Image 1 (cartoon, rainbow, N blue to C red):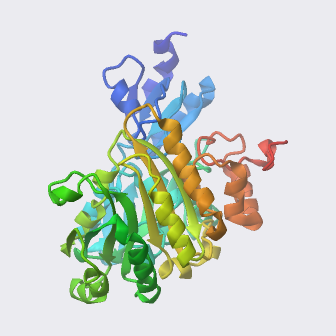
Image 2 (cartoon, rainbow, N blue to C red; image 1 turned 120 degrees about the horizontal axis):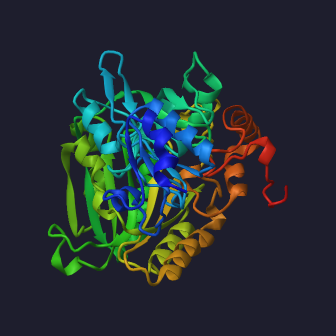
Image 3 (cartoon, one colour; image 1 turned 30 degrees about the vertical axis):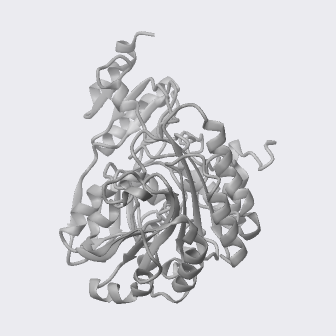
Amino acid sequence: MNPTATHQRLESTFGGELIRPGDPAYDTARGVWNGMIDKHPALIARCRSAEDVRAALAHAREHDLEVAVRGGGHSPPGFSTSEGGLVIDVGPMKTVEIDPESRTGRFGAGLNWGELDAATQEHGLAVTGGRVTHTGIAGLTLGSGSGWLERKHGMTGASLLSAEVVTADGRIVRASVEENPELLWGLRGGGGNFGVVTEFEFRLHPVGPMLFAGQILHPREAAPELLRFYRDFIAQAPDEVGGGFALLTAPPADFVPEEARGKPACGLILVYAGDPAEGEQALRPLLDWGQPLLSRVGPMPYTAVQAMTDQSHPWGIRHYAKVDFIRELNDEAVEVIVAEADRMRSPFSQLLLQPLGGAVARMDKGAMALNMPDAEWACFVFASWWEPRGEEEHIAWARGVMEALRPWSADTVPPNFIQDEGAERLRRFYGDEKYGRLVALKDTYDPRNVFALNQNIPPSALRVNPYGAR
């Protein structure tokens, strides 16, 4: 097939950039965050508008190309690219329109969280967003919505007011309470199953520009006692207190004492989403606990808070994650968690416990597809490494942690936190009622399952049961 002839019709209607194999920009454009993923799309369509997305989808239909939708490229399983298909890259769509008086904002789907935060912080506003600044706003909003502000302001979807969506058949629709309200419900946690979102409108919240936040690092032997103390502290903490407890290897950074570098450690990430003076008082028990290796906590810009873990998630690292919610972090669970962390196979891997509760527990579950369980903690097991060798042992470690935690597990997580567990776990997360509504939405907006590269909700015509039989 002649590539020039194949793409000629798209070129005549496309306002963005088309990148093909062999083009100078191809290898950069096809790269995604997870270094385990190495795919070669037939075409990358870098879209500047909803009309570009519509043209790219028409091209995919005409040539029967698999469609991948890319925002920030952070999908751990690699859903934001395709082998031999068409990548619809919304990265160039970085529009920002903020109304400080109404505390709302409209944002192009190509923004990452660092860019969105920089724009909203000019007005002292924010919305719950990702913990790594180069994560795209689109995928995170649609499939999980977790961030440091969630105990104060809920998951991202709770603040989603409307969205512009390009559907599989090329329609450009708006989802809001007034227009297509069922679609808005589905976008609040249903993942990328219903179309390409090109613009998000969020309710924004007063945050910053300065917060009391930072990191404290302790030796690994302090982990069991510190985690129990942190657990009991969080149970009584106000909603403004966010953050997490991490089991990790101390990095070889200048700010880490030389004798601790490269050794097992544990630490706290502290974030107080309120007045910094009140934050110092609220976090005082954690600041005074034990003999830390280092304590870097104080007033800091919210944009710096959002970048605190960037160095732990560099672009191109190989990554495999297992995530679950923990219903109760009792003493036995604490011991198991610490013991499993001691089996970590890479100095770049981490185990993070993130407290829930607060506004997360009070979200109106009926207003969104997201179906957060009644759980006290989220447990993130991040296996990360650079070299291609040893992949199996890193993955086995992550899987083993979750198997060991099964007695305390809720065994249900949002789509963004599912790696390779299959359709049955996705359906269990939503529950039968919500899953049925999501299938109905899929039937309406994507009956041929054009948007299948995701944690997929098949339309009725392609329904597969959890056991794999049609």
